[in-house]
Length: 116
Image (cartoon, rainbow, N blue to C red; front, side, top):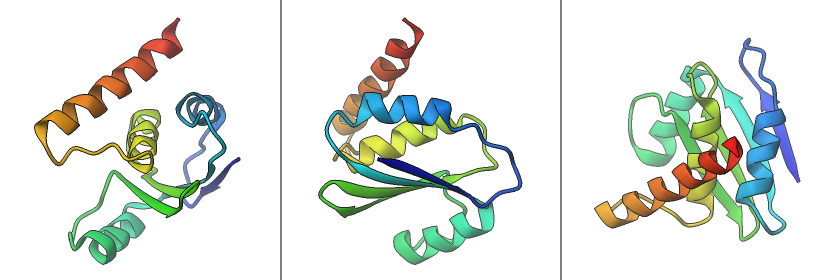
């Protein structure tokens, strides 16, 4: 199940996010997606990552099959940021070059599959 909360003044169409959710999470996964303001993204980034700047996307794994993604709703390319956050919830990362390459490969394959 996927749920959305829009804390911005921007109109956001959820259909693409629902489609991505179905392609990324092949098994049951409860996901909350929050479209946040830059100020909230800065607050969360400072609290959880000790970085005093706005984040593009933040992912929080709450339980094994439950998570939350915060997206900076003022940024372009929200579907990509959503996918990036979702892959983090599935355990992908970019701490090393090989991890980053694998994550980028997954992201490219996902968006290529949407075009066909």
